[in-house]
Length: 399
Image 1: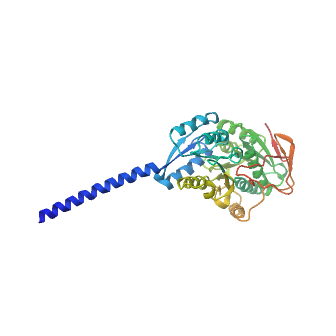
Image 2: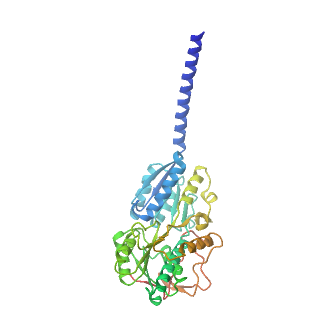
């Protein structure tokens, strides 16, 4: 009797172990089959702040969703090679692609039209709602002018402090800006930045140089150095490398100059000159879009933000825009309190930034002008910036 009981017990244990192993294997196989295959196409890599900002979001989402997704990355993809990268992702049977550079937009939409079963999400572009409108093509961007404006206030407070100390002359304040291209995205950004500065130091004027590239370290650094040599005491940028920050740190040995960054904190490379940076937080959109596709739902019905057809944007109110670490060692007293106050204002009641006694001219069409007395509402119809006017008399494009 004891022998029969032992045999029965051993048989039961073996049966249980076999069933458990089979069950686990089936579960694992099921997870692999259900995992969403997600492609990311980057124009740089982790060494460039713009792409590093996207990678930060990608890694957060990989940690959050685990085995529910499989990510495939194509890095350092030049605009002229975007088609090759998209075709490779199609061969790898992706279900969804995030394309992250403005210059990818046209080819990304063409790809979406040819691959209706792949959801394509394009950052920093404005072509989702133009013909043809596709159910599987989407655009998104944070309303970064809000962060640019606050960064300008930070710089303005530092300038005001130096003016009060007698180290700068109020009537001769020059601001330098390294931009990538004369696109509305760049113009909107540097205009918001200058208006933030002028809310504190209304005499300040801006000088802009374009790199004709999104990511060219040596060119960006050289342009920043030229602006410093011309007497600019604050340098900011809408370009993708740390070149301008390094130029400021080196240039500060000869004259007063401070830096304001983008996409990531640059205090590590410019500890005595970098005041603050602002960035778009891509995580809310990318995570929300992936979860929507996993659930078989429309992205625009699930992601929280300002929805315009197949396009979504948001600012501080949805954590899509963030201010990064303030360099307390060099910032003017009271700066953090002002940052907190303005951040709350943008997140609650909002604030009209593009307003004042200014006129502007479209650099592509001199007959197209604007008067800002009554204000201009940025991102009213799309997540991509649309303010593309260079302010007369206060902003000079030098190249």
